[in-house]
Length: 283
Image (cartoon, rainbow, N blue to C red; front, top):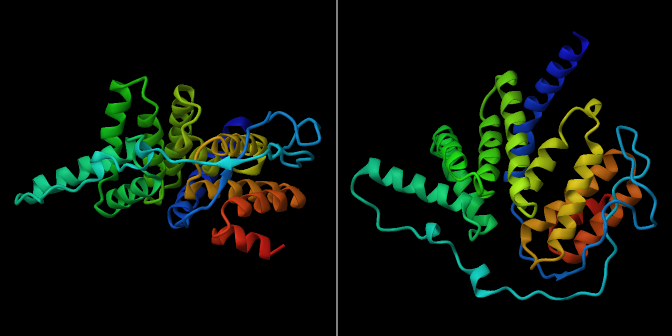
């Protein structure tokens, strides 16, 4: 009985916070970045080699990998190209057909590996404002079931669950959606461990779970993994959010020095990011 009560409390806590968490992320736009990339390092130990055992009273968090020599990142023509789904055709005269075309374009954008982060955010905004999140969930559930080997579908489905979570008031339903989102994010990462949307959104949503669930270590590890993956790729403006959120986790568990180091590292890569500047100014 005690376990059942704790599980219910945790579920309610997750549900109550998931909408706030995702809306905070969606409302932030990131500036253009001038950056280099570094080499990844082992994530199981800190810079000094100490073991990592953070929890609700964390003593040694997952540390960022050491910075190495860097080289300029070149963007290929393919990575710069906009996905075909982002091209708006001539509007048909039939409103219902126009609405369906717009919906299809949004689904293609949020599931396309060629779509930019900004294009995906615009597609999610369109789905929210048109009241088509439920339709998107049904569509993505069908695609995820029919394309079991494609990580983009469960990754987008998890985001759809959380987007819906932020539009409802029933805390029980919010909790159910939050748990379903976490499960499909895991499915996406099992298919593609480099899926940024799945790992970042899972970690960010999980950072709002009740502290008694002891998820701090896992959240930090996800963000550290993202840092490693990001610094082995061409830099993208939304990558700055990883440094912001990882620093927040360090600070939450009493590691102010690690938080400052993380924000400083992020600011060096993304000097125009307003959140990182504010974090450092507050130190």
